[in-house]
Length: 60
Image (cartoon, rainbow, N blue to C red):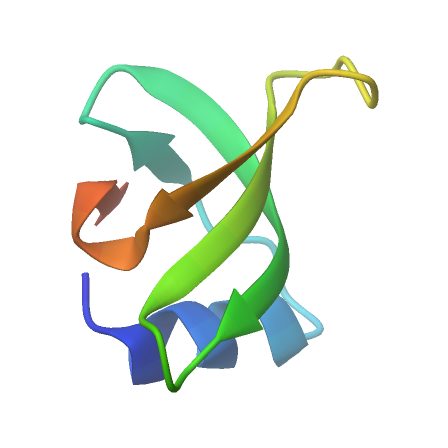
């Protein structure tokens, strides 16, 4: 995924399905456009967060 799309999903009022590496469902919590990184929450566990390259995120 491109960083701009990750940012748009983060800022949207609607919910979009996003997966990490096409497998694990995630919630985007922050997007760093300059470094193309995103902080995501894995599944429903608010304590399970990771900062990953946005290229690892897949919409749908």
